[in-house]
Image (cartoon, rainbow, N blue to C red; front, side, top):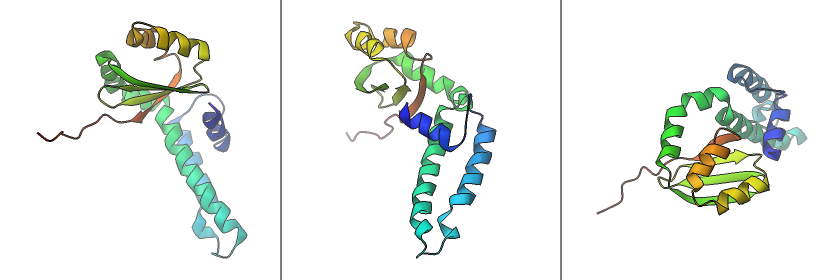
Length: 152
């Protein structure tokens, strides 16, 4: 949640994400902080390099949690959670990462510890997650499914 708020602040986003506005703000920030604008020995050159990396990371992160992105990937998301088979759960702060059998992982932001504890103690974790986590909290796909063939 801290990273989400930091990135929204960097892009001056209040309220809902709009990909069109995000893209405009991204271009403006990149123009402002592009490392090529500064001489190699300029003090701001190093800062510009760090900021441009941060801007790029923030942009990709914010695009991944945007409603338009979720809508575009809804079928794949639904298929993954319907197949079930949770293989790994990681919880840090209010960030919950759930990995499925196919290797796909989703990060859910702002998940309270009480919900996490109920989730891990549930005898039907996929069902609990469908009812209480997926669709309730801001999420993004953090890892893609394993597509590599295993040698015979």
